[in-house]
Image (cartoon, rainbow, N blue to C red; front, top):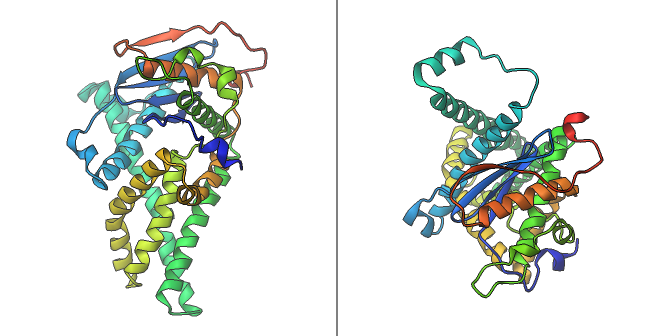
Length: 342
């Protein structure tokens, strides 16, 4: 791992972020957010909207991390579903609604139904994550008392078990064909953000987007210090140290305190991630290493088509046009089969 290529000395860090979705990428800037999805005919469908702002809350340290964490969870789920919805329009088979969905949509409308599905998906994701990465490790770690009653030792076992479960889960899903492509789009997102942060600056301010090409993006690594994967690793590591301070009370108290501490841990992790994104000193590099190692699983080398989607998403965020939906018809047509032909 060449850290000089990841923490680029003369780069101009941005507040740009993104997310890989089904056959596409979401790019999020301070003013606009863009979702770009490659459809079966090779064109790229793009939807832009104003980035939601939270005013004064995003200026308060720790609190802004909690707000960003919740927003990422809700908006990330919705964006993933939006990308699937775009692709579903081009499928031969039409989705047949169940009786409850049909009744709910007729009673409250399609927008309310969509909000219900997003809310339900977030609740399921939260319940699964809490059960697998919070409840299970703290319950299993109780067996560490058979070796020692030392509080630090038991909490260390719990924390390492939690991290091992998370890495194991990510590694397992990385073998799924759909997730392999998502991870490659994740790599395309990182390469494109790296490229933008290293483009020559215009006299009027901001990067010269004319230099944002597939060839330019290709030369950068798929790893980036300001990544959600690194944020999650910070969460697990910071949680380990926080839990040590609480000792090892009975199971129900451990569960409650760990859940109550989660916003604090998320807030601290967010501050650490922001620091890592704008600094390249030795301390930042050491703290970022676990997240960068994990990104070796959650990112992969993209093909040119994936980079093309990332570039269009980035351009859509950075241009001065109002929010809109439109289609880009790439000049380059690639000869290898698309995912929908496999």
